[in-house]
Image 1 (cartoon, rainbow, N blue to C red):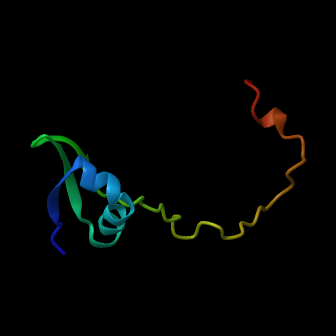
Image 2 (cartoon, rainbow, N blue to C red):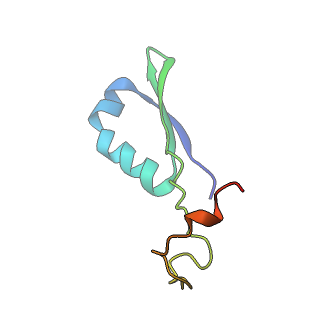
Length: 79
């Protein structure tokens, strides 16, 4: 869907601000706000927040084999 761009003066933007926001949100429209015929601001949609998907297999249960509480510190000492 192509983005709609329009210019509105400050008074119109102030009077219809919630309507302009609705247009930006629903139709991805953008508006240039003009004062005395010169652009002073833009009302534009923000990029949607990307949701991070978990890696495949994330959240699965893991099985640990062996004794977690055994004292194996001797295996790590220098000989």
